[in-house]
Amino acid sequence: MQIVLIEGDGIGPEVTQAACRVIAAAGVQVEWIKGMAGAAAAERYGEPLPEQTLEMIRRYRIALKGPCTTPVGHGYRSVNVRLRQGLDLFASVRPVRTLPGIATPYEQVDLIVVRENTEGLYAGLEHEVTPGVVESVRLITRPAAERIVRFAFDLARQMGRRKVSFCHKADVMRLADGLFLECARRVAEDYPFIQFEEIPIDTLCMELVLEPRRFDVLVMENLFGDVVSDLAAGLVGGLGVVPGANYGTRYAVFEAVHGSAPDIAGRGIANPIAVIRSAALMLEYIGYRQEAQRIEQAVLATLKAGIGLTPDLGGDGTTMTLTEQIIHHLHAG
Ligand code: NAI
Ligand code: MG
Image (tube, rainbow, N blue to C red):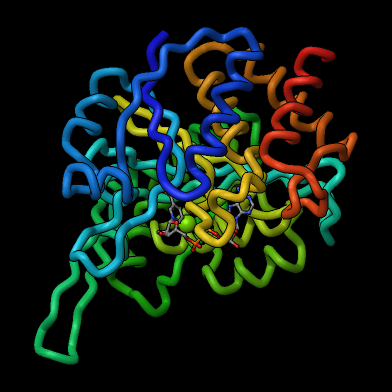
């Protein structure tokens, strides 16, 4: 099977290599088609997201991706934003679940953040009106709003979830979030068997920190989703452990929530779990359900055993020792 691999920048190559090793250890044979994106691509092609990388994903349909640094100050637009827009990967999904062996103030957190990936404040519509005055457009369209809320409800139904919370700021952004809210209500009517809740984004943040267990599936606009997914990651052990997926109707790109972590890049201490779990989501998506579950179980067993963990999890291990522990548990399980 052929899958596109984008190693990315910073800790990207370290953690994606770890994921490739774990996939191989789970017995799935993959021919990785390497595509470039990020700072390395900018250096080589003068373009952080070369068209041939997009073409590659269009051809093979599925990609596993490491984080990409967007070079600042060159007039580049974010690689990630353009990748999601260019492939119409309209839904970002981040499952956030309490993990064994990680000390946090919370227990039994089990929620899914669904983020609209193509519009909102990240639509990229920014311009300078006059020097000292800029405008950023918060684009909301009915088709995109309805499609992301429908996606969230369908996901809830498939995964046996009870509730979808639509997060917004419609009292202030009356037109933009007013339209989004109206679309959400309309779509919710088609799913009377799933509870629907409307919650202001600021209230959501407070309640997530107070009582995260009361949430199930959360759906929201692009910028809100970016912020809330990092916040939610913090409830269960941080960016090093939370996986992610970007889905469109034709393509899917699997990647961790975290970025290229320049502060720890090249030191061999990045936590590979987020990318390994993203790879498990990918295997599940392409039909290797059993292998995906075995990888997830191996990650849980490794965390429970607490050996070889990376510094972000309080251990003194490395990317390598943690990966080896996961492979060990994969073979033992
Ligand atoms: P970041 O997520 O890279 O790092 C934030 C903090 O979390 C840092 O202290 C870092 O060391 C830590 N961290 C992140 N991942 C970790 C891991 N796997 N193991 C252990 N510690 C980890 O966010 P930051 O620093 O704001 O962004 C750095 C670059 O990454 C920027 O250029 C940004 O644009 C890019 N980025 C790319 C993303 C993507 O490609 N999907 C997503 C987020 C940011
Ligand atoms: Mg982010």
